[in-house]
Image (tube, rainbow, N blue to C red; front, top):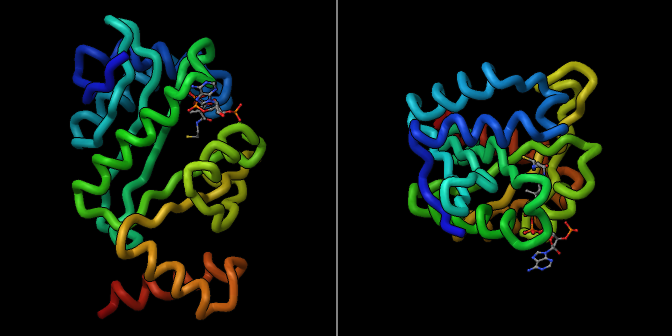
Length: 186
Ligand SMILES: CC(C)(COP(=O)(O)OP(=O)(O)OC[C@H]1O[C@@H](n2cnc3c(N)ncnc32)[C@H](O)[C@@H]1OP(=O)(O)O)[C@@H](O)C(=O)NCCC(=O)NCCS
């Protein structure tokens, strides 16, 4: 297995992987929409890394690096083919994505996880992501998203200090919004 940066030649296989996911079908992903959003991602210079076994795509991690939210990178999708799970592929893709994010100077990684997706929620928790809030009916009506954040490097220490100052993790989501808007109006 090797992890490569996806190019246009991988789009058809990546789209097939997405369409095969029952989770993504709940979000209205169809072959045409999957190809369109992947092509848009590559045009917009998102980073998509693909786990390949020969020409076979077994998984992907899709990153959008932004200056928003105190320089957060958005992990838009982490997906491993059904038959390839629980072998460490998700962990390898996440590690590769985090390494790339660090190189961009991003301070945090954020991800949305369907609240009913217990397996992915425990996966992210094990990998150091904190659940900081829930966005109700956010991407699709009647589907709630848990918002996960992992702070990287020096900013991780800053975030911990903010949590201590605020008196605990419960107030973190409100605190993050306040401190971000302060930073952006300076
Ligand atoms: C979440 C997801 C990416 C994890 O991928 P994965 O390849 O199964 O992840 P890993 O193998 O690294 O770790 C998952 C499990 O394998 C176990 N594991 C990891 N390496 C292992 C190994 N070498 N041998 C045996 N088990 C191992 C872990 O303990 C973990 O257990 P659990 O999930 O049963 O609690 C995958 O389940 C998925 O694609 N889900 C659908 C899409 C999704 O929900 N994405 C997240 C929101 S964007």
